[in-house]
Every structure is written in structure tokens, then in C-alpha cells.
Amino acid sequence: MTPRVSVVIPVYNEGENITRCLDRILREVLLPAEVLVVHDMPEDTTVPYAQEIARHDPRVRTVLNTYGRGPANAIRFGIDAAQAPVAVVTMADGCDDPRQIDDLARLVDRGVVVAAASRYMPGGQQVGGPRFKRLMSKWAGRTLHMFARAGTRDATNSFKAYDTAFVREVGIESRTGFEIGLELTAKATRLRRPVAEIPTIWLDRQLGESRFDLGRFMPGYLRWYFFAYGRRLTPDRLGAKAPTQRGAGTALSDDLQKTR
Image (cartoon, rainbow, N blue to C red; front, side, top):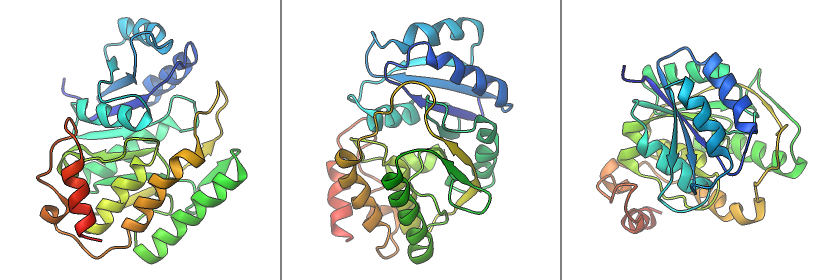
């Protein structure tokens, strides 16, 4: 059966912790789904635990990322490998609520190109996490919603569903951190494509150690934050005919620079 949603989970040495994450997703996702556990190296400690679950549940697949190391490349690879028309990106650390994966996917089914799980809309909440990071994220989300009309108050959250055809149309340039959610929201905003949100309760990581490096990832976030405020674009100006995600993003970068 062809899946209706591809759940993309970038991982890095999660080890046994992935078991709890996958158990919750497999229990809560009711739509026909595939779950892609995307790892950067064959020796990643996550792999044997994920493969053990895959032996009992064919929805799970371990996928070796060949785009380069890091979360951005793992997410790019996972979306490119997705077989479903909807891809939902979620983290392996338990911060996201898997019960909302179906709801996010159904929003894309209804026609939005980006569906965000929002911590900052009414009914949403963020529990824990570094205070400065939380304040910056909330400020970015609210200003983009108010002034750029981004369609979500939480553009920086990675927990989002995407129309995979849209992603392959516009491409992904991010190569460093977790700014892909902001990049694709910014591109949808500039193209005037529909973006929607549902409230979520985000819980700070309970298992393992976070690898989010705000200082290293900040330039990417700032780039796409300011890009969202540009004038309306057409797909050809955005670089719809640029190389696919498997190739270099230089042509798309040139097109983006021309539209600033």
C-alpha cells in the first residue's frame, strides 16, 4: 500500500532511545505511513535498534543519508526519499507530539504546502528549553506572522508537514542545522502558497543530549527570516528549474540573490 504520509526522523547516535520514539509514532499514526529513520553513517548507534523494530513493522525503514552529515542534510535526504505526497519532519528526542502527525498531514491533503505545529498560537505551549532560544524563536515567529503574513506563528519549529511536490519544486538550500522549517515557510510566503498551523505542546528533550548549536545555526535562520519579507515571487524566479536536492544548490542561491 502506498503511504499517505512519510515521517522523516533525522537521528545521530540515539541508541536505545529511538525505541521509545518509534513506539509512540507507530502507535499514534493511523494514516497509512512509512517512517524513515535517517542516519549519517552505518555505525550510528540508532541503526540496530531501529532495524529491530523494522523487522516487526514494515512501516519503519532505516535510510543512510548520502547528502553529507548534519541535520539539514538528513532532513533533505529524508524528504527526497519519501514515497508519500506528504512528509512530516519530527525529532527523535520526544519533544514533538506524534498524535498530531495525522492532523498535520490532513492539512496538506486539504491544500496547504506547509502545515506547522505551533508552540506560540493560542492553545500551544513550550515546556522547558533554553530561555534565550525560546525568546528568539517566539519573537521571530510572531513578527513573521504579523508583518510578513507567514501563515504560522512558529516558523522556526522543525515539527512540520510538507507537500513533497512543493518541496521538490522549490528545493532546499539549508545545509547546516534545523532552519529548513523556516526556509520552506519563507519560500511558501514569498510564493503566496497556503501555510497553516495547529497548536502543539512542545516538551524539552527528556532523553539524550541536545545538539542544537544556536551560534552556529543563527546565520541560516537570519538569512531565511529576512528572505520572508521580500516581494511576491513566481516559481520560475524562485528557481523552480534549479537542480534537484541531489545536486548543488548554487543555481537556486543565485536566483534567490537576484530577488532580494
